[in-house]
Image (cartoon, rainbow, N blue to C red; front, side, top):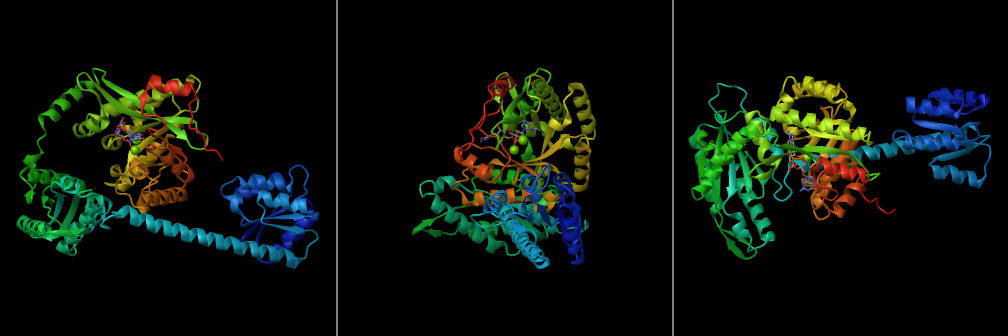
Length: 576
Ligand code: C2E
Ligand code: MG
Ligand code: MG
């Protein structure tokens, strides 16, 4: 049933309209002045609003102007009722966004006619919007699950495909083999021939692989690497035989742009369940074995053996000095400004850890966070970062930037720690920072292992008042249906979708679809890694809420961040 709100100060007129519409089967609500009308509209979200123009205090135009600012009511059909029929009045109402005008006195037929037209239009608009959203969803799902060049499934699809073929019954003899295939010296071969030939070669390789594996899955991992999942191989030897056949087929001549090209590949093989229970572990193992095959000259396969995995001495050295980094106070927190795209102002910062190594200089987190994660050192390091960032933010707030927000990255281990919530409470008490200014950034891979537990943890953190951001969105395993289950507040679009957005139509399409989806889920959108003016204007035009990136500032030490705040440095606003 459609609900109609009638805002009319003259009781007699109002009651008349209400009675008439009630008899027509509408749900009706009356408001005797503009103020009550606005409150009711926001509360009940009617399907249509009839509103008198001439009312004491707040007139119909003011009501209209106010409601058009409300995102939900901005498109609700709004019909003005007026005794005057002056042209200037019509124009004023239309400019404010009224949908129609009815002049008093009006007949029953005029009123019902105008209402019917508006409701029909609205239904059409709604339907159009729904189909667009459906299309965007389908398109996005396709785009995020496929590689645009070869049309093969991409890394994101692998997890799902793996789940589908993973034997449920543990006594089964069958194993699943995960193959990582890398083309040998790909850049070397392609550089003199150019990228167009390179792309054609990759497509041809993808086609050969697809014919080789039949019903099994082939996915593209990155430029010159592919993964294959062989469901149901009886033993290792069979996986090896298949790998050998693939190598042979791939090494036949390719004729591209009138030239003959030869290329070989290296394959690493990992077996489920022997080498790992999860696709990530299996891929990592297969990758290690592939590297080994390359080191042995390529054009061959290797089965994974745990012995490959001994870390290099460099890694070991780094690991032992990382143990002391915290005690020796070698860690630093850098801050990268986050900006509101509408106002151009700095609204917060992302805290990013650095290691000031006595000999190596600044070591970036990509080098030591994974190591710290493996060894468990990430737990005390992460706690230290959280505490330092909260303390710093509170200090800046007290120095005159009371609304400054802080985003802190959580690692997988930290997130699965039982007492993370307690730790956070303690930090909040010690530093006095209001939790509503904190955003915790998580990545998708941390949530996929055990969805239910993850949702429970997220809700427990959110109950403290902090916001949750999904970081590096699009690079993990997200499907949209999956994303909807989690109570996120913010979505950070990964830099890989922002890069060269103006030249890469596929990236632009994915990014637009991500934005449409995030909006429909009411998430705040932040674009990461904006480096150029063109990227900035793209994210701005596509209604992102915020951004961070080198264009405005790199992550900087606390003192430098303070300078940016004091100078009130802003993003230039577009000239409109
Ligand atoms: P992230 O959370 O996605 O952080 C964004 C990364 O993008 C940062 O790299 C930042 O310096 C970089 N970036 C920002 N703007 C641009 C740009 O315009 N162009 C380019 N090319 N890059 C840009 P960073 O600081 O090296 O951090 C790398 C990753 O390390 C972070 O990715 C995050 O996952 C992790 N990390 C950093 N600090 C911490 C921490 O305290 N705890 C945990 N668990 N992880 C951290
Ligand atoms: Mg982050
Ligand atoms: Mg990120």
